[in-house]
Amino acid sequence: MNALFIGGTGIISSACSQLAIDRGVDLFLLNRGRSVRPVPAGAKVLHGDIRDPQTVRAALGGQNFDCVVDFIAFTPEHIQTDLDLFCDRARQYIFISSASAYQTPPAQLPVRESTVLDNPYWQYSRDKIACEERLVRAYREEKFPITIVRPSHTYDCTLLPFHGGYTIVDRMLRGKAVIVHGDGSSLWTLTHHTDFARGFVPLMGNSHTIGEAYHITSDEWLTWNQIFEITARAFGVEPKILHIPSDLIAAYDPEWGAGLLGDKSISFILDNSKIKSLIPAFVCSVPFSRGVEEVAAWYRADPARRQVDPALDSLCDRMIAAYEKAWPA
Image 1 (cartoon, rainbow, N blue to C red):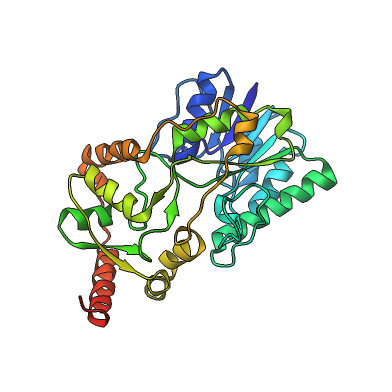
Image 2: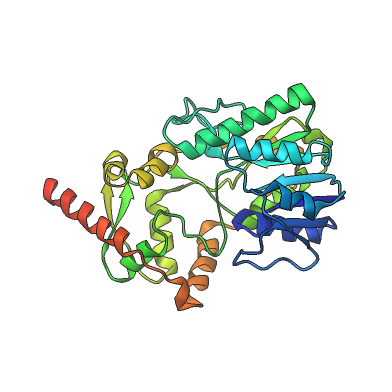
């Protein structure tokens, strides 16, 4: 099987690229060569910018693919570009959507692939829904061979699990309070990118997946209090946690708030029975407590990676001061 990954060196796609090569896929990567992650040995790089279709056509030449995967399509316009480029080049097209597209808050748990797509809080999610709708129309009307994959919170060694990244860890290391939304008890799932890849790669070239949607996530559920505590311990400290309502955080920082109200503030449990019925061997083997050790080691390895955002640090101080003034201990 030959395959084209649009992207291929990102947080999710890097693990998928490596596993695809390990399993004998003749893999091409279309990217601009700007990722901090290396191209895996054995991949063939096609230099082009998917936002500039002419460069893509030049890079592709007359090649066709058994499978094309777009890891970096976020709007219906991006999808239309792919449809124009690959309508006659792909035997399967896989779109990387998002589990945040599901009904928010969900009417019932666990969330399944049949759960309605409806997120009124987060533009990112609404755009992913619009992408899926365009692809489903292409499948119905033009028989374009789509498969939709909805990751949830997937990470590699470079990605901390909370808004602010290393700035929040820096606060922990300095003994400052860190903000956890709500009361910290909502449930969340973090999936290591190598675990995601084990569910994803077998979808490639699989005729049973055409016209279907799948989410691929770990079965480990953690509260946000646990996520902060486990992360802090990986960096050798105990966190000072202050709980602040998500809507108040949104009032101070709409971008931060959108990611909370539209995703992370709500307990979200996903039923993985569909992917497991197709791939019985699919098991996630990296618990967050082990995965976050990789994250801590990556940040420790190079001081240049430990970037602190002074504006966010100051914003946290202001929110905490205002909240403590309104609700003194």
